[in-house]
Length: 350
Ligand code: 2NL
Image (cartoon, rainbow, N blue to C red; front, side):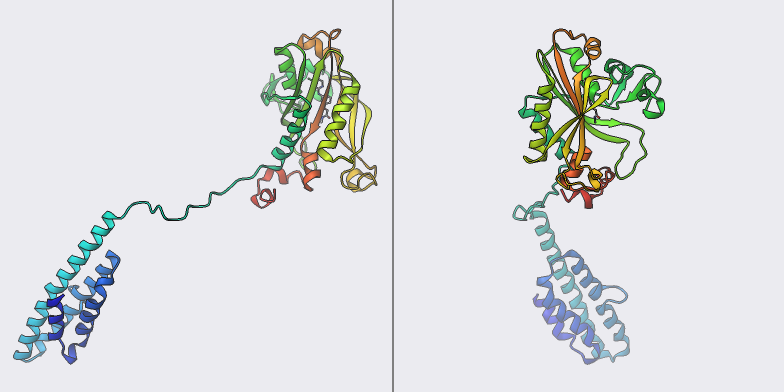
């Protein structure tokens, strides 16, 4: 720095105040420079060919008398290499630091990972699975693209049955369709292992429905099947009643009304006391105090025959819950479409 301050003292001329100030400021600031870009700015400011302060000062020399020109010229000529040397030293220093600095600062606090959530349908399904698990039911899964045998024929749904109408199903070609219930999975299990079976089949099912607040053309079902020697309708009532108390609350009431399904005989609809009005009657239960949550019944002997089980040897019951409606009632969701739009503002609430 000595040659620079010497130079600075020698260019101290009133009409060349700027170069003096710039050089002095540079001399003061250079130790504290932390970036190559700032150093480059200084270089341009002082040494730039056209508008650097040294070059500007030089251009004044011609206007001065000989002696002043000589003194000043010498001072400016000495200042130039002094500035260059100082910049070069600082540059080397900054580059050395940059090269030696570790690439990762291990002392920096970590980034908070964005945690996802469990979708309300998944949450409801898991709760249902957990409860049936305690009752000894095993979870099975199967394909969503099915053939007519597993979706209809084996379930005792004959070719003329309205459920097979092409307008009520998503057929992919004349053989395959998207399954309309998860019974297909239970048929596959019975085809592949001998009784007893005690299984539940949760999963997506598809029906061409007009979508509104209460209907979706894709929804979730959880079907159950218990086949064993001596299983009765009383077992069915016991299992579904225990499930309802565990899932909806200990004080929920239950009832079974006669119904019809091609794959069960006898068949019933399973109701729980309305979860919103606790049975008093409200718009959600259409004033009845009851909500239907499942269909059920004793497995039809024709189904056993289709899968190769001996209907004289075993009996069984089956049931089918939708997952959306119980989930919506439990978590206070009033439009089924919210469940499938994947709007984070909705999903973050669970
Ligand atoms: C409903 C009706 C039900 C079944 C599903 C079933 C499965 C086999 C054999 C016999 Cl492998 N039945 N499943 C039985 C009765 C009703 O679901 O309305 N679900 C929402």
